[in-house]
Amino acid sequence: MDIETKIALVKRHPTAEVVTEEDLRNLFENEEHPVAYDGFEPSGLAHLGSGLLRAIKLDDLIKAGVRFKFLVADQFALLNDKMGGDLQAIREVGKYLVSVWEACGVDLSKVEVVWSSEVFKDPDYWETVLKVVRNVTVNRLTRAVTVLGRREGEVATASRLFYPAMQCADIFYLNVDICQLGYDQRKANILARDIGEKIGFWKPVCVHHELLIGLQGPTKMGGLPFNKPDKPDKSDRSDLSERSEREEREEERQSQVKMSKSFPDTCVFVHDAPEEVERKIKNAFCPPKQTTENPILEILKFIIFRKSRKFELERPRKFGGTETYFSFDELEAAYRKGEIHPLDLKLNVSTALNEILEPVRAYFERRPELLEVFKKQEVTR
Image (cartoon, rainbow, N blue to C red; front, side, top):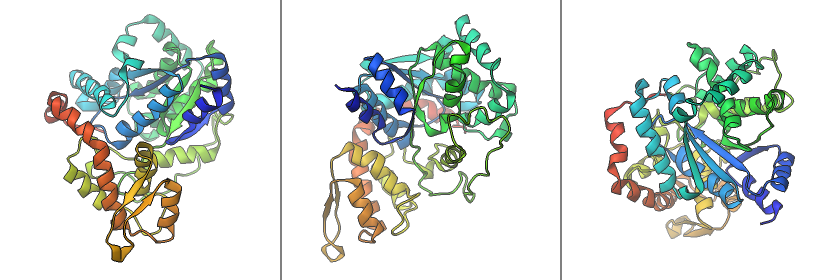
């Protein structure tokens, strides 16, 4: 496969950005099989964004010849008080999430699964953490706590302040060339780019994928009105060489409105029953003619059109009859013009999504033990 085709695969939706494309090209010119990683906290049920969307993106990189490492961040979840601080429950959720990606189509034979609890046993890892913290300010780490799914004001313990530095150390300890993570993890990845060469390592390429907006639409989690974040503090702007204020504001916006497992009606879980999928999609935010901040259109763009070459919109003849769309752009234009009613769109998205999720549901029906932990343990933010 030629380099331009590999780059096109990496940039394919749902990729939001590559930092930088020039660095990615240089990497492919020098490495036939560069190493990428995706890390996750075992902290709850998998929804479309954390399960299916990420599996789609991982498959793109694997096709481009990238070797993958899954970092199951069990100890990170413990630091972040996930699953009530029960480490055994956290590890059970970790096994479940690896299974989710397999159920969603990831070829696990081409993936190395790494657990943070094993990494933490190596003194070399902690030496790398110390190199990071010696070269970064407290302000920078405080701003980066948003990678935990927390606001800067929620740094109640030193462990949370240490978290971004440890995430940077993961990148170098695992010999990662590409950080393939959600847009909400941007601060830690850019920090790694900023300091990598200063502490004797390298500048990783960062591939950040979109975060699906919650079904409630552009509101903060918990039902509060969404407001554009204030401009970031200009103090300690050591990372401005890699990002603009616009990019930082977009990162904050995505973190506020993304799908969240903590609010079940704002997301579709990958093993939801068909009727539950239909209920959630029917109640979703989907204003007529609105093509931005529209969760139904995002599901179409980043999932349905990625899993299928066409989308069948079935409706009564008196409302226009059945229409077939072969690209998202074509469907988006029709919706913007008011040619598609929101209810017709929702009904057909439910049908298409249920077809995509059927193999995932079947997988967990065969392995119900993977879901037992959620019956015993409350999911925490």
